[in-house]
Every structure is written in C-alpha cells, then in structure tokens.
Length: 305
Image (cartoon, rainbow, N blue to C red; front, side):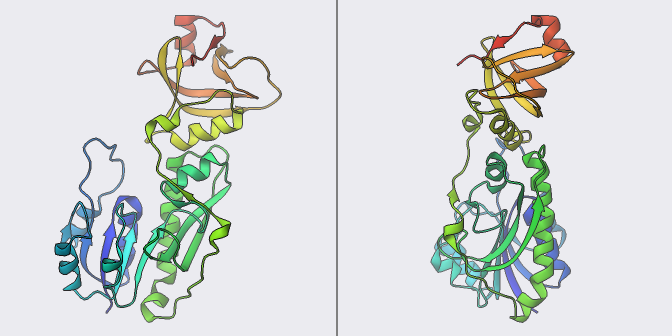
C-alpha cells in the first residue's frame, strides 16, 4: 500500500482526497489551512473529511519550517499530493517523498500557470479549461504532466460554474491515472512552457469595470468575478454599484457608456456594444430594473469615473 501526505484545501482538495481514499492509499497526514473568517467560505472542508476518516491534520502557517519537515519526514511517505493548497513547498520538503510530489492545477497546463486560473481563463474569453495533475518542482506549475481533463467554458458561464466543472475534471483526471501512478507506470510529459504564461492573484479592486472596453470584455469580467467572488464594480449616480450577472446584447450599439432601463430590462452601453445587466446592486442593495426605473426614471445615466 502506498503512503501519502496530502496538502489540500477547497472543493478540489475535498474531492481528490476522496479519490485517494477510494483507491486505498494510506493517507498518513493531511496538511490544510484554517478557514479565514474574512473569506467567503462557500466550499467543502478538507479538515472535516480527514477527521471523518480518522486522518491526523495539521494547519501550519508555513509548511516549510524544520518542525513540520521533521514531522513529515518521519512518516516516510511514498507520495505527496497537493490539491489547491495555497502555500509553496520548498525543495527540502519536496525531496522527502520517495516516488515524487504531485499537484492538481485548475487549468490545461502550460496555460494559466499560477494563481486563480479559472478566473483568468474566463477574463481572456477562453472556451475551454480543465485540470492537470503534474509533478511539483520548486517553480510553480512547471513540472511534468501526468494527466489532464478538459471541460468547456460556455459563453455565459460564471467562474463558480466553471470551477464546479474543474473540480469534477480534477476528480476524473486523478481517478483515471492513480492506479498507474501507484504502480509506477504513469506517463510523464514535459511541458512546453512557451505555450502558456504565469498569472498572479487577483484583488477585489481588480474587478473595477473600464467602460471604454468592449461589451464582450466587460461581460467576461462580470462572469469571472461574479459571486461568490467580489463582483464587477463601478459607480453610478455617485453610488457604488456591483454588476452580478450580465448577458451580451446582439447588434451594433453606439453612444457614450451609460446605464438605462428599456422594456423592464436594464442595460449598460460599453465602449463598443452593450450588455444586459441581469442582476445588480446599487449602494449595497440588490434591485431590479423596475425598482431602478421607479426610483430614478428611464433616462440614461453615465457611469462615474
């Protein structure tokens, strides 16, 4: 029986830990994160799953300390598996498992290496993404690929919807290759790093809308940061506004960037084209197009800069 130490968090961590257990892997320890009270915790708990199965867990702020390294080395693991764990593992830690350390990344590597790959893929208008199981090196997301599973990104999919698909893709990729991996016969395909790029994390302020952009670009941003993420933001009538859901409007539309209500529906004219604003908040309160028209009328209102 192969022994593993698992570094895991979030839904991908939850589902992939289940896969390891289903295949009879001896999970000697789970390293996870304490939930941040300032974060919107909408995902499953790896710690609770580990506790359910009687697996010891630790939640170090830094897994690369001498104490944690010694604790893990004493377990003599064959493998590490990292599933959406948020801290980098340094060379001294990566050198411990006898058969290697593997990570599950939420893109089709070498595309979208780095942070929040699902959100970046939507922002860039991709029509496909997926999950990749790969060997870990000191540099993130550049090790040899063991398995991949693709999923489609549909034109109106939000990041949450795509992330749910990527979670299933991760489960499928791991479940399919795990027997060969445990037997030492899994493939290793070197990445061509020139075919992708590295992306950093995103902050709530990165969701601010530039109304000079095209309707398609703005629609992509709205989808990429829709709840449970912080949402696409702007200012209207001097009040903060969040656009939570949009649809593309077909046909040529010109004029200044503005918000307006027509036929009981809300719209936003962009640099080129327009979007239908399906859901939005103004000054912290969600309202309908009819609510807005009843309070402010149906004239056009330019967005504040």
